[in-house]
Length: 84
Picture 1 (spheres, rainbow, N blue to C red):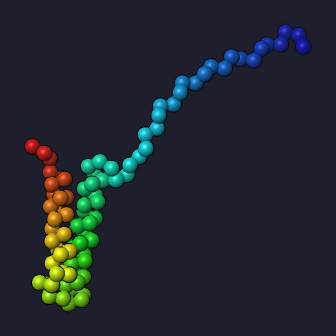
Picture 2: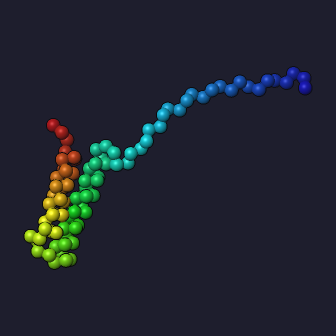
Picture 3: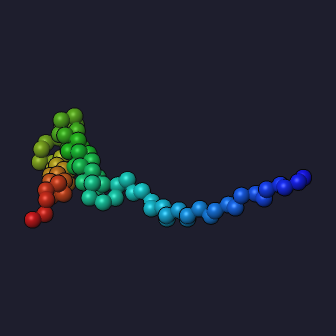
């Protein structure tokens, strides 16, 4: 083995930047999405009790989810509007 070349010098790679976890429902967009889903579920619950179960509109099993739907709908509206 005459004149064999030494193996090439391996250069050290730069270290990777630390990974940041992805929060799918984090931040402003996630909060608005969760409020919109809860508002839709409350509205559907109130509509189900009133229309399918034929409960009077003044029954608390109709009024409470309807108030919840209005409340979370307001929260969605507040989340989507810009702060002044």
